[in-house]
Amino acid sequence: MSDNSGRGQYGDDILVLVSEMYYIQEKTQKDIADNLGLSRPAVSRLLQTARDRGIVSVSIIDPSERLKKLEEELTQAFGLKGCRLCPSGEDHAILRARLGYRGAELLMTNMEPGDVIGIGAGSTVYETVRALRESRDYPGLRVVPLSGGGLGVDGRPQINQVVHMAAHRLNAESVYLNAPLYIGEDSVARLLMEDASIRQCTGLWDQLGNALIGIGRGNIVDTQDPYFIAALEAVGQSRVAAAVCGWFVDREGNAIRGKNTTSVSFDQLKAARNVFAIAGGKRKARAILSALRGKFATHLVTDEDVAREVLFMIS
Image (tube, rainbow, N blue to C red; front, top):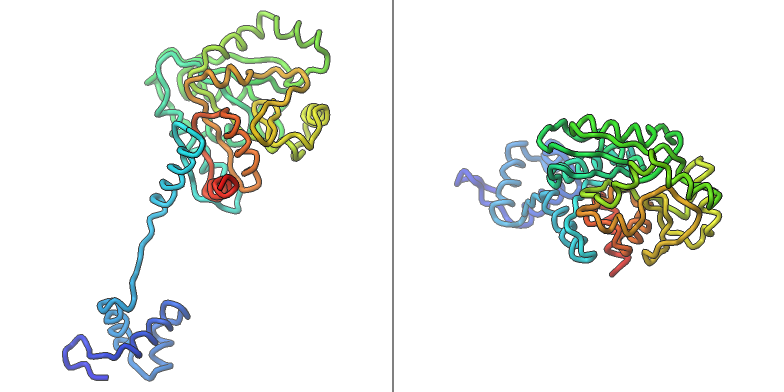
């Protein structure tokens, strides 16, 4: 091999060999130099020549462009107003934080003065509220829970606490719902839901402007909440594909009527201007698909693995 031109006159064989060693076998330039009896500057020139001749093509893939394409596919497939994706990952805490950040961003760009904002239960909704930036740009906001609930589970605050946090950050009025999520007796449920203090909250469910909801894996009991377990057993676990605001949904997105639930109705949820479903992790893909089929959300916030799995399941 000669280098009379300063750039070098190299044959394709040596260029391919050095390129394979460097890019495919992941050897260092020093290793290649030692193996072939060359100097390190010579190896560097060989690699540059391979790129110049088109033997090696270096592509840079922007992850945001990849995610944007998936967002568009999901939006079209399910008639959504919008979709936001984040990179997937094995660390669930990091994934929830990523989802929460994107959910908060989406809510903030869709709020209007005077909105009633509904807050659902769930870890990703909690992370979304935590990610909200403080704002005084939207006067007259009211924040309400979308369901009753007892003590927080899995280390999460109780839903009224999350409502309080959201209202504080948005300079809004908070309205609380002091009721259990599931009620066994019909007569007790009717009396409770007619109480004036309860009606202060539930009466606002007909005025929802924006709602944040999680999506649970309804047919898999991954909670220690005995009321949830009892409600699930009452409708039959095998029928349930997802849990949305305390209600259960089958694989096709149909609501399954079960025990009395102090939750926003699906009709009220669907009447809201925007409903942001925030859930991720590949194990939730089927539940998310069920909720999308049921048209319970106008916007979806999830991760790349879920997006690909959902699109695969409908292909």
